Image (cartoon, rainbow, N blue to C red; front, side):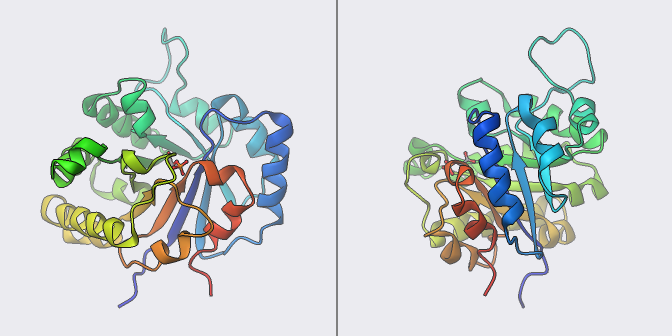
Length: 252
Ligand code: PGA
């Protein structure tokens, strides 16, 4: 039976762009056409959330790339879920591997952020993924299950409908080395089984699991054909018109 899960594609712009290059991205997003059966989300740098929201069509949701775990206060440099909502963005990416490995975010902090963002009404793309040495040591499942548990422990029942899991093997991010469709499917399937055993079969059936790591216009169709791949989180290629092809990977 084909999955009932709606395909979901996010573009993580990371720390890239300025008003002029962002205008170019917005024009190819608005020209589309974007498959109406796919949820499309773009995550600009925080400084441009408001700008992007004011210019991109309503069929594209806007996400922050991270946020903090409290509403306001003396936390220099951070932004809160209420600020994200105030400028019309509705999603936040949490636990991205660059937040984990460049900025030292722990499973515990990511769990706290997930909890607070959900309690504030945001939708969350929660990222997990193993490093190359962990994969080579046969620890992929241990790592992604541990990371998923730290997230799942902070999601209350019905809030699961506002969570998307992004499986992004660290060795595939920005390296041009994509997981093969079989490698992605294998991990996605194990993750869904973990969710079934540790959360509930119903959540496992409905939760969307994106793949991320060097997704491009050339490899997206084959990956999208896998039954447990419910979308993508795209970095580099989300800055280019190729992103439209990736959004439409499930179409015809
Ligand atoms: P990439 O990044 O597509 O450039 O590999 C993916 C990501 O970090 O989400």
